[in-house]
Each structure stands twice: as structure tokens, then as C-alpha cells.
Length: 350
Image (cartoon, rainbow, N blue to C red; front, side, top):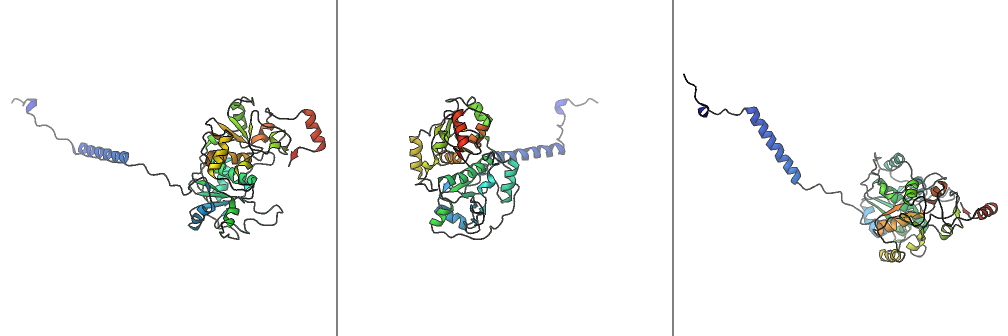
């Protein structure tokens, strides 16, 4: 009996397995399409309005426990007996003495190892998204360098929401707000994993390469924030092996940013006018330095964080490490003058 031709054969039905696969494929495609079309999850909103906050702005945030305040004053005053923190601090603040962020006496500007900073800040219960306000004493322009250096440290580690209290704890008291006494209430420790930002920091080696081993007029603009006697080579820090400044550096004392010798920064328009007058608002790379990254942190903070100038970097180890590396210095006294100073015990600040 003849077989029917192909065109008359009944088409075969797809198997149930193939049908299920087709259904799953279609469902998966639908889910992926939905995910792709969905808006990205919004980034965590910042609690702090700016990098510099006033006491009146901080007060409601403290009342709501919306921020963590780090008190950077030393635990005791210079006599080693009179307490600072326990005698009175911003309510809810945690003690975070500036000295605990510094390097050894031989190189105080040295950045502590990453693991050590992660452990230190994790022990305070901080995470990269914790809103943090840094409060010094607010006593004078030099003291402001401590909070500024800690702010830079946190930003360099990847903290997203950080500010400095303008005028420090003194401004809080001046505004009529109450202090809390006694020990701090501890926070639950965290396991902090930093996300370092190399662009915020220059090492000695990198800066030497960028400036062709100290050739004046080459590389980024260099800004020396020390008092003039350091810049001119008449005075040096005891930890610095040599006198002088980095070749081609511009000089500006950090006192200029503040209100009449206090620890309170001037209004933003005055800061901008000063920076403009000093020709510091260009877009070329600018490196801030001093003896050990203390005064330099204030220059970095004002220019980068308050005024929004791009391409500002901190050289944390500054002249102490630069001089120790045998790199060229400008305004360095003659050998005869150096010998004379050594015999007289002059020209050194401990």
C-alpha cells in the first residue's frame, strides 16, 4: 500500500518539555526586561548639608541622633590631669583624640596603616555611610588643622557624609547649647572596609616624580601653609631634618581663612575672595603641604571641600619626609648658618 506523501503527513506536536522550556525562557526574559527598565536604587541621601556646619545646624541633628559627633580634643589637657571630654562634650559625642590619628614622633604626618584605621574607626561603631561631624575645641586657626586632617582621613578612606563643626565645641557652647558630662555611651562596633581614594593623597615618591625631583616650576602648584619663619628657612620643626620649603612653593598662612585668630572660618564669600586674590582657584593640580600635614589639611579643606576647587591634593608627610628623603629644598640656609644654629640651639621648634 503506498505511503502518503510528506505534504499530507500530520505535523508532529511539540513535546511538553519543549513547551515548558519556552515558557521559562519567556518568563526569564520578562523579568530581565522589568529589571532593566526599573529605575536604579537611589543613593543614600546625605544627612549633612555641607562639609562645614554651624552649631545651629548641628543642634537638631544631635537631638534626633542623626549624626555621630567625633570630639577631637585630647582626653586630658596639657597638664595630663584635667579632663577635656568627660568634663563636658556635645551630647552623644565620642572621644576621638587627634593624636590617635597621627604618625610616630619621627614622622607625625605619616598616615596610619589602612588596617589600623579600619579597626580604630570600626571600634567607634562607624561605617562608610555613617554621617559624621568632627568637632575640635575651636580655640584657634592652628587647632582647626586637627579636625581638618581627620576629615581628610575619613574622606580618603571612603566616608560619604562628613562635616566639620565651624568653631568646634566652643561654638556649640557659644550658641547656648548644653554639654553632656561623663564617659561616652559606646556604639556597637562595626567591621569597617575602607574604599581608599588615592587621588586625595601624594606620597613623597609620587610628588618627587611629579615635580621632577624638586625642580622649581615643574609639576603641580605647591602651597605651603606654615608660618612664614618655616617657609623662609629661619625655623624648622624638630622632627624635620632640614630647613626650607619645597622648590617653587607659594606661601599662605592658614590663619588668613579665619575670623580674627579664632577657630571659626570666615563666610564662604570672604574665603572665595581671599582664594581668588591669592590666585588659588585655577584648575591646575594643587598640592597642599606644611611640616606634617596639619596646617596643610586646612588649606586642602577650605579649597577643596568649602570652595569646591578641583584637583586639590594633600601631601600628608610634608617637609619632614621630603627633607629626610634628601630632596631639594628652597630657602635652605648655608652650611655655615646651619652649624651656627646648631651651636646656638636656635631655629628649631619642638
